[in-house]
Amino acid sequence: MTSSEWRVGVLFSRSGISEITETEHFLGTALAIEEVNAAGGVLGKPIVPIAYDPGGDQTAYRNLARRLLADDDVNIIFGASMSASRKAVLPIVERHNGLLFYPSMYEGFEYSENVVYTGATLNQNTFALAEYLLRHHGCRILFVGADYIYPRESNRVMRDVVEAKGGEVVSERYLPLHADEQTLRSVISDIVRLKPDAIFSTIIGRPAQRFYRMYAETGIDRRRVPIASLTMAESEIREIGADACTGHILSATYFQTVENEANERFVGAFKARFGQEFTTSVWSQPAYAQVHLFARALARAGSLETHRISEEILQEDFLAPEGRINFDADTRHLWLHPRIGVARADGLFDIAWQAPGPIRPDPYLTASRFEDVWLEA
Image (cartoon, rainbow, N blue to C red; front, top):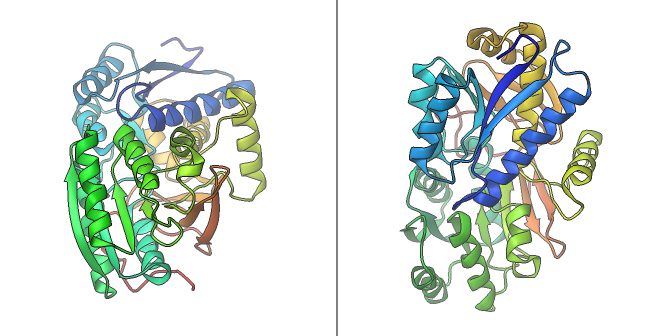
């Protein structure tokens, strides 16, 4: 790296099972870097990204993280999306004393001095979703998820909340990441047979998109019996087809329909840069915000040294498109804005509920109680 630039790594999959959502991460990252550079860079020097596509393969994630840190003279990485990807690169980042900016919602129960966590933890999305489903749809919930750590941990916590509030989990199934049509149809058969009041889905990628299309084919009233998710955002709805998704529910900290000036600027810039057909989402927005947080910290640190960036960024208070965010220094996670959205005919979400302000992250669920949900009827 020359003294005339700030070199950083970008490690998101633009192919493979999580192509759509991780491309959103990538586009949010790229837009923010371009904005910082257009404004003069940081201390007069541009941010220069070194980007690789791991293709959704965890071995590739690990090898490319090592390449960035050991061969490309990089110690800051914006990257990983699935929890499996984060777990794959974390030992490499820690061994090389790098700093990973991780923008995905995830299961929590992790702390590393070498990670900045900018996505939601379970107390910032799952608690409110459980309450919303029980109040507005009924007490019988069917769980289906991909067989890896995030779905299993999300379902474990969701089950605890649902049962603590008098609800019932009528079935809980885990599918391979690349679940085939026959496997998905067996889940649809379970739904038709068990007649739950709502489905909590943590299936991801192409299988999730097929699952939503199959559900639409059943003719079940989605306004009455929705699929609820923590991940199925605007970009994937565009891929599935909005007409197959109306009525389904997403619990997230950001929607394109959030109303504030910062979001109006973000949505306008995103569409101007990538095309009017593109939507922003809970995948692109945290990736975008974390680059701006990094740039502000870098301006004060004046160095890419891991400890200095880490120290400065925990002091940040930033007006992001989702609203004002700041770090909880004890956990290295952000205070975020929980919201519940209901999918509508144009592929965007009506915001059915939102917290009155940012909610403190509780990745170990040590302070959160199931009755401490901020939902109002």
